[in-house]
Length: 305
Image 1 (tube, helix red, strand yellow):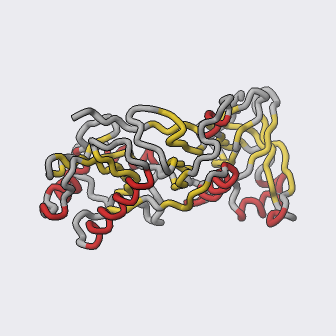
Image 2: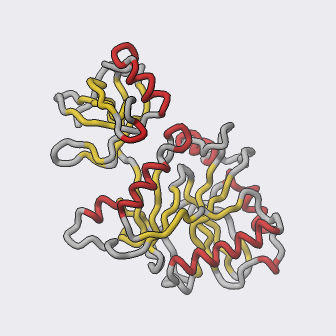
């Protein structure tokens, strides 16, 4: 049996920068990207194995969920050798996904985790048919999860919803903008899976793309810009400055922050140091998808882009 390694997601902007972008003209499933732990479990010769990490190591903290899979009646187990891939997500008191840095500590423990974990499944592989298109793999995934949920076989098991399918990057970026405003502006981004693509073990290509913020800087607020459309008459963007005086406009503020900071800019946010996220810093020092993350009251120095 050949070894299957995790498929790697490529940033959409990296494919866009190529002379011949591979995503052009293809339809992709657009799914939310969760701030969770990548996990998988194999069913070999009709027996569920152990839940493992991206690196292929058994996860001791997930032993109770492993036992649930292993106790599934034989009639509900896949007849072929398969791998179920999912994100382990721990909801917080608001029902939002717990931030990775916190969830990481819980999942890393050797003792069984005693918090409810959502197993958000996004792929189901058949070992001898990795060339099966994602559309078919996802349909099979939904069928399996439907049976397991109906019979209450494994707690927290669910499929990552497909928000829609599209071949238009403008729509993908629009969805990204909506997703990252979730969870008090802590959303992660989106994953794009090409409908007709096979599973590319251990590869990074345009079959699997992602849109998310990757870089973080502390910058000083030096100005404001009025918004347009629904943000007319309130704050549209904050102007932030780095240690060399390079300025950028950023968005991502909550409606409450937009109203407060527009009304009393000098008394609330002017001169403050804020944490800013972006996908990348372009050659002209502008920020690709620059977004406000938080006010950093603990910082006195700012970064250089």
